[in-house]
Image (tube, rainbow, N blue to C red; front, top):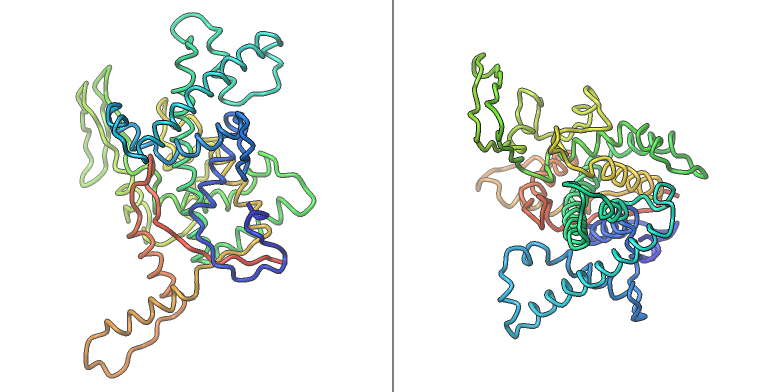
Length: 381
């Protein structure tokens, strides 16, 4: 990523639209590490199967929501955009089936228990060898894998983006995170999962950012087998019985902005997460119980790894022009006849910019995410 942007040690105050970079990073990491799919940062154009697959998969990721919401017959219309989407999905399905058969053959010719590749894709393929209700047919591997990939891509991208923006807005929090990264991951050392778990403040920064802008605004559950008693303390102590067969929607956004549980709920404060720290299962990001996100540990490791590698070498800040624009708008909107207007402090500008960023958040793909953001990037040395 850094090489493709032309950044180096002399890079100072480069304004970058950060969304596409984080989206690309998440896509590549999920494909390569999570699913063993041969995707690189710079897409090859050599006509090989890997290159064709990578290009088609990227197009499929971008069109995931339109694809599942529109009927198949609509793709027969002579509209280039629709034909391109249909071609990309057909290419992905065809090549993924081919890769599945190839991986299945590799597993059959080796000791499956000692097979070196342990990604999700391989585990799904291995289930085609099972019998009973947990067995998968080859035709089921592709949709299962793509569902995990597309869902994970959007939510992980949103989580990284929100954390980067909050750390850019609040430089004191970024500095604390940087010092923790340097302490646990100094230059010349290897970043491991144990190192990621040791960086509790960095993880708290991620959880707190996603408290403010949750990647999933609600969680749906259904009481299918029994009545569920729920004890509440507000507005007065009581026990509520949720009848069997009820559908329950948990409003993530309201819960995470409850001033009783989170004093100053609109303030970015990672200490909210440090008081009851759980690196393995931050419930507010991934849900809890048997329906919790399957990829929660992988996602947290990927997010922490990105932040550690990036913030160790690069400083991020919001764009000064955006702060100045806010201040100018505040003066222009001041009541007429007001003799003096107290200039906004830097902290007030950043708080207002945070509010503007959060107001622009909207559903994107399968996740809730901030809008288009540009940040200022500088090398640390």
